Image (cartoon, rainbow over all chains, first blue to last red; front, side):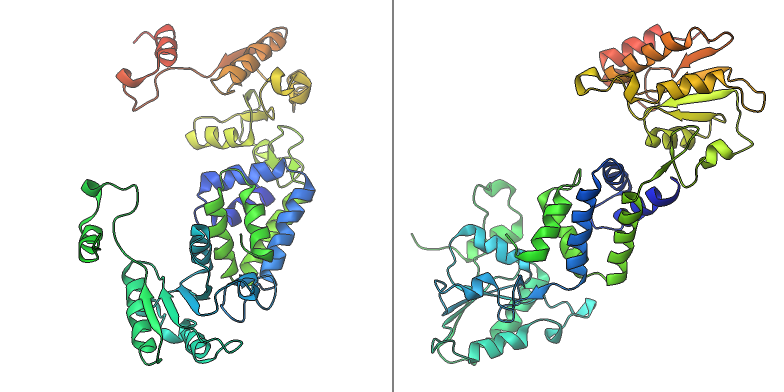
Length: 202
Length: 202
């Protein structure tokens, strides 16, 4: 198509998720007209990620230091742990401003067909963490916030089975139901079924 | 949001055209899980573009060498020149497989409000090119293929005025009209008007 370096850049950009050939072309020509300093900033950001991102040694979230900002925060409730699949889920829960505990990032969900079993996730670390009091404080509740899809549900079920044996530990799951602002008429039958079986007295 | 290098990468990716915050996050986490060798290829593609892309000294298209593949091709008709705004327009005309001449890339269209006048485009080079026979062959037709929008039309009008004085030179413009496969009912009035005034006898 194009000659030389421009086509190489279009090809490399086109490999990124969600970037089609047209977008790749647009980005490449944008970069052609960009100040070298801007390209350098992108290159150095890539370099740092390539050299290895630090993951928090407590929760497994992406981190700037050995222990992440949330796990270092003394105002956080040490008795509460919210288990999520990915770092982006931490961000989603943080945005609610409703959760004051800490997190545990599994690094995915159980998916045997893709070769992801319990050993590929940070489940062992979760069990160790629950069994080890921090500053004399025990974890009293684990909120399982895996995605409400097949893999996430399977992971939740597996975790409940593993966590059953810890005395005095409450294990909860995020509520499933109708999304706020949604329309009953347009809810899929699975969601509406969940909303029905999880109905609360008022 | 995220800490350290991951957020830096998300920020840099988010600056690219057409990449929103969600896409930037998705690309960043994809790159986190990518082999270092893949990131290196992207980095080196960026490096080559940063070091400067070569533009063809004849037509102004992006090129791997001093003169581009099309301008070097001895099978191309030297008497025909198609004037386009951008390198991607060369690609669009090439895809038709209808054009056997060579190109002239202006590098944009006249747009006084954005400070783009005739001196910011490769118009002087076009005039020199038309006045200089190659291997004793004169350019006999210039096809103006700028975009059919305000800036493109203004550029076409300006070029026609500049090219009028060359003896024996035909200046043509791409036909405007209904797009093939389109529907008369849904054509906008400007396009339909152009299609009417440009009607051909059958």
